[in-house]
Image (cartoon, rainbow, N blue to C red; front, side):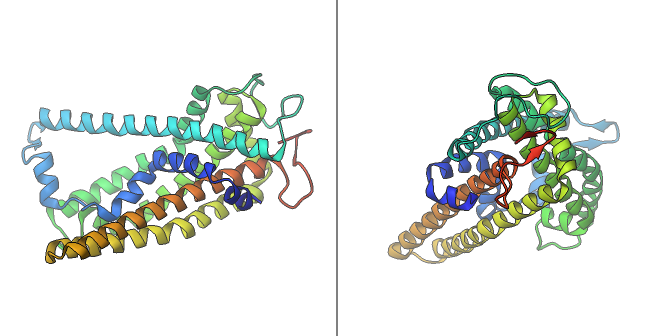
Length: 313
């Protein structure tokens, strides 16, 4: 049902693409053409005298503060755009189904109902708070990744593999931890945003209601999460591979050949691969949003709206 709605409404794809790119998809589509930094490159960027016997050098502290500020700004802006696309897509899906929140608030958990449509700021707060599980995982795993990274810097195990790949390869348990905490944040955020939009609750009430909904419906929650994540990987994964292969071929031809026809043809092929990949990513993001909205609005088995503590979502 969600797939059918998404395929019939290409305008959703553009909105979904904006949310996908804002939430990190731009990094995913940049990886095939970005050369990961080497040990020498990182050392040059950080500076050889960043850490001295007296502690961290002022230059390193300034550099670290700038990097943290840049990442925080990117996360804040990306989350804001993501919240805006959530609002558009959820209302589109609910409007297409002819559903509404009903004459009164839905009792899905703690928190006082707040009439009216949730403002964008409230959705931003919900999305930021839902990142806490991933933030905890990142804080825990960051210590281990730092240790592995430092070891690779002073005693590289492989000079041909990029440093980032080696660090992730040597700490698979941290990769798993980050993956699980990201899934937890994704689950909480997806449900909480829809509770806010359908029920008009406060940010705290929406988060509490989302936790209650997940605990009452663990099978549906996990099934929807698994289906949307795996489905997105199946759709977007091949596009990333095609883009990486096309870029590698383009780079080889541009470096080794002076044939303008071949260079133009491969550049056009790369552009087409990128356009196709972004289109598929936008459609996949819109489908994920529609699937989550329908999971809360109605029973996928066709039994009508799903009751939630005396009401419906």
